[in-house]
Length: 419
Ligand code: ASP
Ligand code: MG
Image (cartoon, rainbow, N blue to C red; front, side, top):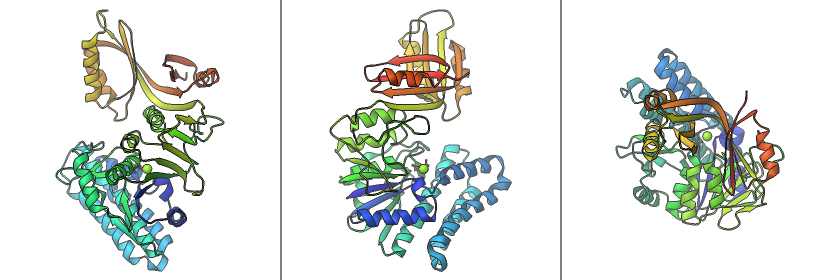
């Protein structure tokens, strides 16, 4: 089987949905399972609705109506006068979403988030599966929550690999084109869970692993994996081939093309991953597989914006030793801070963290009890793999002040602050 993943940008409106069908017609849809994200910016929109639910509930209905209108417009454009059946399905899903908000008693934000944000994927796949059938490409809609089984760590759930493999094997049968959701799964109690923002690539890898798929293709609005994000870096080039190992490193340092968790399962079974353009589906794009590290061999640039640099020292000038460090890490983990870079000396410990869940204040309250803490917010972390002198100069020119620099043989990392 082949697994295709279509992200939000590839299904953002009616013409993109038609393009998905055209990609399938061009590259074949037999024994294909497609994993689809929410349409366009729908995930952000529902995140906004959760916010409204909590802070501004009188606006809730209007916000949900907008979400409905957005999807119904796409349905209308796709099906015209044949829209009734699909329109009903979409309205039904919207009703379920509203019903959840109206009846929910849980104060657990992450739980509420997963139960609701998942509707983005449920609606998009309902529309796409229906449309494919309508144009004569028989497709079966599969609820990923029957297959992807996780723990209850809402918003960033961890997979139960054993059970998930069994479930996928029994639900995803060869033959017909299957359409399922990225990003979502369910826990032991069958409550919906999500795998973390941008988690649909990972979903594709999970299905591929369980099915021992022939390949995974991520269809994107770029030609493949470039050696830097063209929004920030000049003269980027397309990477034709990267090894799993290199791709894992790039994803780890924040290259946004491939979700970090995606690669390991694929590498384990040596399932090649292709990143290709849904605009030019005949182009080869990038292949991530066993083989050459990097072809062409060029420096690869990654930027992480809006990070926080913490510099900790002990209150009494004593050394920072293992015991303090493990304590610091325990706190970082407790407050869900993702650690991007660490550096330590005898009396200080510097760490760059990603304050993704907005828990910096809480963390600082705890850290301040034991350490002197210097906080620099809004720093940029640059990583260059396979750096050379020119690449180094290029990165340094991005900021006024180098706060920290670290390098290994292959990797240069620089923390920069703009004044
Ligand atoms: N729709 C989810 C998100 O935007 C998952 C994904 O697109 O991969 O984060
Ligand atoms: Mg998305």
